[in-house]
Image 1 (cartoon, rainbow, N blue to C red):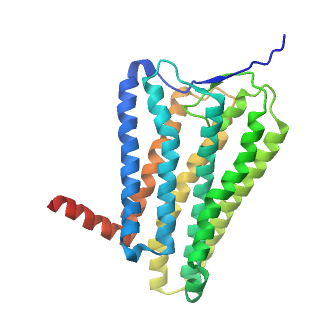
Image 2 (spheres, rainbow, N blue to C red):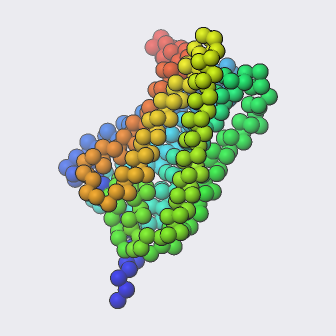
Image 3 (cartoon, rainbow, N blue to C red):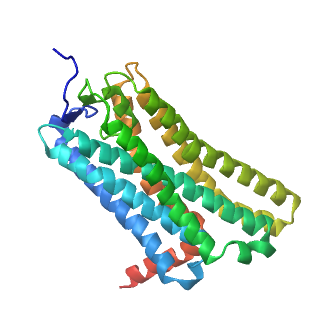
Length: 308
């Protein structure tokens, strides 16, 4: 008899005492999901409404926040259903779809941050060339590429995953991420090679580009006058904070979830919740508080709400 199993349903085994705390989990996660949608949407609406925010930097910020809403929507509805269900299961095809959307949007964030880094580089280091370089066409190309390139590259990985033989039916996480490779009977060499290629192409290379760009900005700002240094600090610091935060969480996702050792279930749960709760809320707060123009319009909106 063949020892390979025809696994149709995947059990999500990362939940901790869900039977005991299901309603508490549900209320907390539902509240966080609503907050994510409201906070991100508020900043996006402010950027759309106010003409002085129709600049490349703010357009990229809006794209980043829309990305956060899509990222959360890929995870939260299924998570909320699982909290109220007796069994936390998902079909393999739905698991692949969630995996695909999750990593497409995660890598899109790196590419959007790369576009923002390039925008700041041209603005601070080559201000006279800025209007000719950062045209509407350039912005559209950056935005389309940020979502299309990861979508196309990861679609190949989905096709490869769809054809692998599965011998296991339990994932250690709350949703489908890179730990899905543990379901395979025999690790696929082709998938491993393609995974490394994808990680380098839409993960590591954008990160190196961002670091190079901000290093150049810091060097040029240091050599320039006070105004240039102030502008660089005001506009680059929020992007760097978002980049550092997101990079730490993605590093966890790529490395820790692949460890075969008995990583404590509670620690795994806490880190996973940070990825899906903390980061999508971190972006709007950072940009709402640290970006001067957005902060000004946000204060105006809050004042109007209070006056009514």
